[in-house]
Length: 351
Image 1 (cartoon, rainbow, N blue to C red):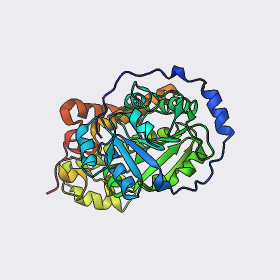
Image 2: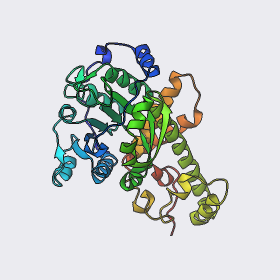
Image 3: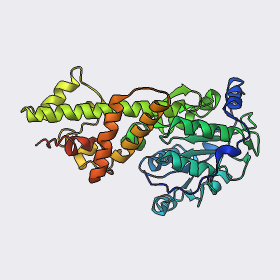
Image 4: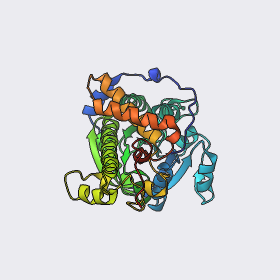
């Protein structure tokens, strides 16, 4: 995922109302009418052209949407401009020319900067062109909810879908780079249900599954719960394979056993961490081009921080966070998180 540098942030305190007014608005839902215009005719702005975002934007283009892109990484934008795709120099310029804006960024701070920074999507104040914002970044639920309040306090330049105010959906994804490439992502969506239903065709242009999770922030909450379970399962599978090797059992044999018995999981049957066992996964290419260990460490920190805020004990998540932080400190932060098999458990390649 391209690194989006953090600029100074504008405070969200300029919002006119608080959470209670937003939730009251959510309960008194204004129905979005079916548009008489084909969805593909909507101008879609896409911000964040990293490993995931670039592939998601490509699938929108393939689906026929008119897409304009932005990223601080000019090389990433050049790959699109060379194909005739419009590029913009700032999030603000994206907002000025888009009906829908999708963001796919590395962190909460990046998302806040893109939305509320000096050249952010909300720079024009309380009157916006986009009727819908979709944030597919993996961030903390609290930030998603604060942004929902900020967006809901704005108004639209032109009434769209029977709405006079814009709406934002937090819609993080699961599936990784391979699913982003093939358009088979799963979207976990939080926010106004009517907006989710109106945007479903947009999601299905980039993925194969969409799950409505409830109000604002619930999509983000679902994602950090999913990723903590993924991290712990990868550690368990890697630990089992490495122990098996030490006891004289090959990882190939253990993989057959795991995948036909009770240990079967995504980390064993789809994303195996042992080099030489499975083709087409990061472990088969020196753990490159996958989900970076530093991003997993970041997501685990989101989970532990959120757990602390609600007084929930999560010892496995805490331990997983420490292990992935150790990987990063050892210089493996850019490698796929499945490299924990090699660099933490000292597991061996399958020959």
